[in-house]
Length: 177
Image 1: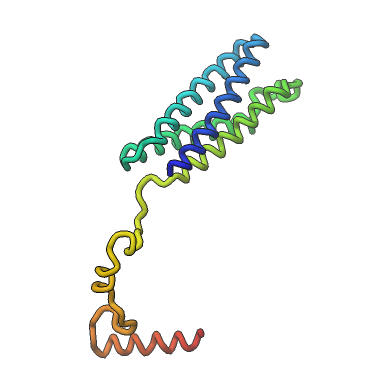
Image 2: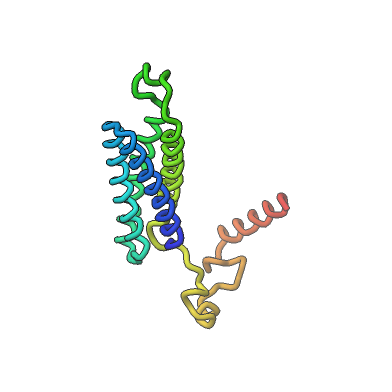
């Protein structure tokens, strides 16, 4: 899990760098609306980056699950909003005007990184595995004492019903194999 959280932090670091570049470019072009937009996005990605960097060292289930749920919900909202703004133009008249291609390329790169980060954060397990092999928990001597070695009578019940069930299972097996 730590490797996944480290990869998530690296992806968010790249997105933060791209947002900072976009903020610097919008400061140079001195358009107030883009400065505010990229300033808020950069602040948001700083928060996500710090949150994911903090979650790398968390080892308890509760803290880990809370951090991952928080990161994935914020990334889900961010991805949804960025994707909607990618599909729908601001105004119909603005769609026909020439746009700044440099910021558009960076913006779509941020969208792709955001989608990858959301998928990765959503896929990180939030708790321990539900199945552990017995050999990792118990010694071989204990496993040998407790394991049932008979294939035909697993539950230990002897009777007409269990014999009929065993015969029908063998017939089905012979039919298909």
